[in-house]
Image 1 (cartoon, rainbow, N blue to C red):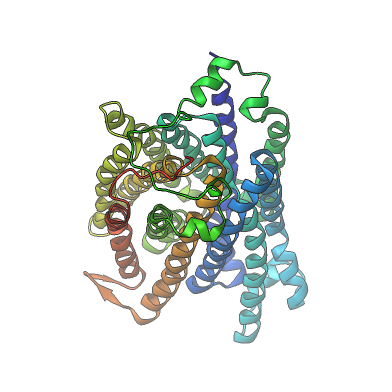
Image 2: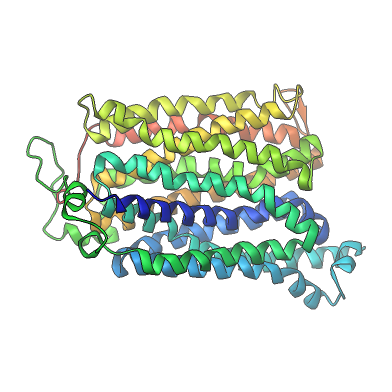
Length: 470
């Protein structure tokens, strides 16, 4: 049997790596941009929330778009758009200088007076939001296309593992970014960082066009591998199935919303996606607020944090096979694994209380929580393939992605407002004051979100109920 499916998995891994490189550049440069453009935490929260909102809305249509035009072309359009969006960030400084009427970046940083500072802040925030929206439009297609490709190239029992592998690209991107982006900003300016990571997407696109074909049309695969991929296609008469109409294979949005399976997936994403994005977008700001760390000082802590999360992504995806190989159906095995995984983020509750010892304590505890998220993510994505036909997978993934993006909007904007309020009013919580008190509040939600999500998902879909035609 050939093994070409793992070539496709590798391509998905590299695409997701580029995806998160592009996404994380802003958070790593936030301390620099904050000073240059006179941002508050609320300004930064507005930018990240706008990205999350547009990403959420785009996910709804991206999944449908990928289902309509196919995995290959859908993914190609997606990465081309987000790479353009990533590169355009580099011109936000020039745009701000032009509209404000200042000569260069040094004049921006040195600007004084409430009116001019407010004008710089407003224009720069608007420029970055515009670029983030282009980035979000393209990035919204990554997971619908990747999950669809996984369903096309892997049987159900292997999908969580394959998803865990390609999803670990998010961690690798988050590792590489802090080791390279701050250095590029120091050596060549922050604009270069956006241009370089934007160019990487076009490099990947060149390989994708030549390497991806549907399994039935792929000349580099043999019939044995095709038979292995399609082993689930035979009817399973002993399984309780949800009845669907003859048009199920071409489900509309409204048809998708009729199923509890859709709502279970969307709820799980709504409650947990924002936690990962909070860690991704706010950890550098947290290190600055709590430990006065900026620039290259945060490189190794962030890199080590996301190195640990790789293990959660890969082994979390493999975890359900322990239960599936002992007789559980895919959904039951996945839900058992997700319940166990949901307890690990509780360690984040200790991040602030033990943070006085060393900044490494919250970094390591957040790493455990982020690692658990990646394990959770690999499995919740795979529940879509367990329940729905291949032709609807990208659409359902898009619906769930939209829900996750909306959840992130509330967390990102809420965090920005919370931290600004705590700083301005010196709010006290659990012995912490100011911004540290705000982070203590945010960590509580991050810790309990997964158990709450699991309980709701289990109540909506208590047992294995694939849609007819899956």
